[in-house]
Amino acid sequence: MKVLVTGSRGKVGRATVAALLAKGHEVRAADVAPPTFEREVEGDPDEYIQADLTDAGSTFALARGVDAVIHAGAIPEPTAHPPHVVFQNNLMGVFNMLEAAIRFRVPRFVNVSSETVPGFFFPERPFYPDYLPVDEEHPIRPQDPYATAKHFSEQLMDAGVRRSDIRAISIRPCWVQHEGNYERNLGPQVRDASVLSPNFWSYIDVYDLADALVLAAESDLPGHEVFYIASPDNVGNRDLREMVEKYYPEEDIEIRDLERRDASGITCRKAMDLLGYAPKRTWSDYLDENGETKPGVGGR
Image (cartoon, rainbow, N blue to C red; front, top):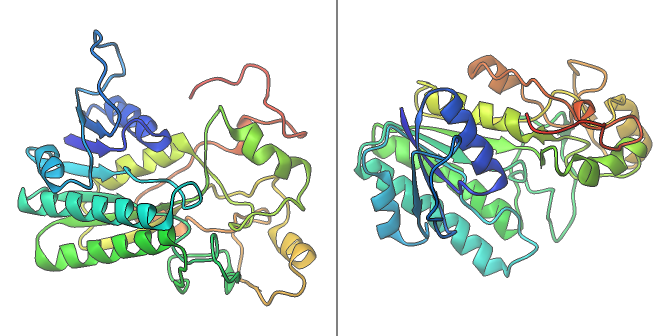
C-alpha cells in the first residue's frame, strides 16, 4: 500500500515509517518540520512533505493518492502548551485529515488516540478508574484539553464511517518508551513500586506500537474500532492486585480477572484478538533489575 504517516518525525511517527518500509509499503511522510535537502539513504520515506495539519489545504494535498492514513501528528500532552493551543491543534488536525481522506476516498484511516481518553491522567479534579485492568468499555470522563480532543477524535471517526465508506481504527497507546528513554521514565518504577503513575505501571515499546499501527493500516475490520495498545506486563513485573491494595488502599478500584499476575493496568486483549497484535518487547529487554540500561542496548 501507499501509506501517509503524519507526525512522521515524532517518536511514534519515525518508528511507524520504519515498520511500514520493512513490510514493503510505500510511505508518504508529513510533519511540520522542514525537509532536508540531502541524498536519500536507506530507511528514508519514499516522500516527505512539510505540512501544517491545522490548514485544511495542506491535508488535502497530503491525502491524494494514498491507500491508508496513519494520523500520528499532534501535540503529545497538555502541560507544555496553553490549553487552547493543545485543543485547537489536535482536534482540527484530525478533523482536516479525516475530511481530506473521505473526499479522496481513502479506504483506511488509523487515528492515534490516547490512553488518557478516560480522563484520569490530567484531571483538574482528580479521580481514579472504576476498575483495572482498564479496557475499551471503561467510562470516559475527560477534563483536560488533550484527552477531550482525543475523545472527540474518536467521535469524528464514528461520524466518518457513518457518512462514507472509510474504515477507521483508533489506537490508544500507553506511555511510549524507546531505547533512549526507558531508564529515565521507567527506571524509577523498576527500583521502587511506590513511584506511581496514572496508568498503573503500564507502558508500551515504541516498536511494538509501530507494529500495531501497521496492523491497523492493513486491517479490513469494518466500521470504527478502538484499541488500547499496551505491553501485557507491568513495569517491574509485580503483582498488580497486591500493588493496588498497597498503594491505593482507600480508593474503591475493582480488580477484575487478570490474565497474568503481573498484568498491565491497561489491557490489550481486544487488539490481540481482533488485530492479531502480538507484542515482542518488554521493559526488561532494556533495563536491569536496578532500572539501569543494560550494556549493549541499542536499536530494535
